[in-house]
Image (tube, rainbow, N blue to C red; front, side, top):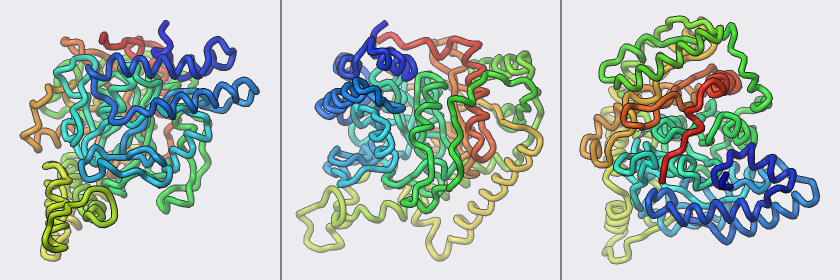
Amino acid sequence: MNLHELTIHEAQDLLKTKEISAVELTRAVLDRIQAVEPLVDAYITVTEALALKQAAAADKIIGQNTARALTGIPIAVKDLICTRGVATTCASKILENFIPPYDATVMKKLTAAGAVMTGKVNMDEFAMGSSTENSGIKITKNPWDRSRVPGGSSGGSAAAVAANMCLGALGSDTGGSIRQPASHCGVVGVKPTYGRVSRFGLVAFASSLDQIGPLARDVTDAAILMQTISGHDAKDSTSIDTPVPDFRAALTGEVKGLKIGIPEQYHALEGISPDVLSSVKKAMDFYRDAGAELVDVSLPHSQYAVAAYYLIAPAEASSNLARYDGVKYGARDTGAASLIDMYKNTRSAGFGPEVQRRILLGTYALSAGYYDAYYKKASQIRTLIKKDFETAFSACDILLSPVTPTPAFNIGENIDDPLTMYLSDIFTLSANLAGIPGLSVPCGFSNEGLPVGLQLMGNYFEETTILNAAYAFEQATDFHCRRPQL
Ligand code: GLN
């Protein structure tokens, strides 16, 4: 087997027994990046010299038998997580030259665990999108079919994991941006409970919804990454001080007696592709056969989730993005005659069309005359959606649904139709509005050979329950073992 194809846990074992070195492993991944990056366009920055330096340091640590959780493991990082000394662009022209003077908390944790950073990966600009087509830098291709999108906004992370251009990656999920690309690229993606992982150093899109999480080749790897990045952080006032469980130890594969809720609204939706429905149905059969109990539940307010999300997220974004004014960060128009013109020109040239659309929508929704009609109403609906989940979780342990209505669509297919694009988030947005954890695990392939994901959502801080349920499914199937031909 080629070293770049290893899972994190396989690589850990080989590093520990010194059958391979961290430098060999990192070199193999860097060679793989060089070979397939022109086909996939997953990376914005490859940090080759840094990676080799970190790998050499890892080999020393392994030599002294003091290896930590991720010592010598090559990981890619979404380009909106601040990395000290390494450009963090958010795939935006406005931050093209921004080099953070500090590390995000998750980066500190990765480094402390001994990880090797292979580079920063592509995304929709400021994480706004579902296809990575909104990147201001390049369009990432789906490694399974390069005429298709990898999903978004963490499309670079998902494509890099699927194409073996790293062993695992970090992404961020504001309305589905980890789960949706994971589903489209045939990898595992986890959105933790809001507050489980520190957002310090994550460039803010919609602060009350954003969460960092892992993308990985299997559930065990996702659990290993979760272990490293989770935990309370005094630097993030929304971080929650609650014990971090042993995520990997929770993977027993036992689902007997587990109560799995099937949300009626998610399965009855019009327009779900038959390929998605049949894969999800087979997953339901698996759980029933394994001794889990399937129960019907209702999420009556889910029909309003897309509308509520697309008011709340742009409202928060319009406020968060006010800081890019040409004065404090990144690009600045130097030809303007006045300060106001400098602001205008910098923002007009620096932000792409989708980001500008969101800023306009958000500013409008928050303006004095419209606040009650839009932002307040959306916030009220958010509370009702949260209550729907509370009611559902009084009758079941986890919820099962599709991740997306269709497998990966063609590049260019939805880009001029923002509403269709927004609807592709219909199954994922509610978890962010409520703050509950959710994941995507590979559950099949379409007739055209495109990966299909299964979404499992859990109650607050019940990541172990959904990870274990996903693990049980993974043990019984081989979807996660298949890799795209490149
Ligand atoms: N697709 C959604 C949006 O465009 C979610 C993005 C995300 O989770 N970052 O807002």
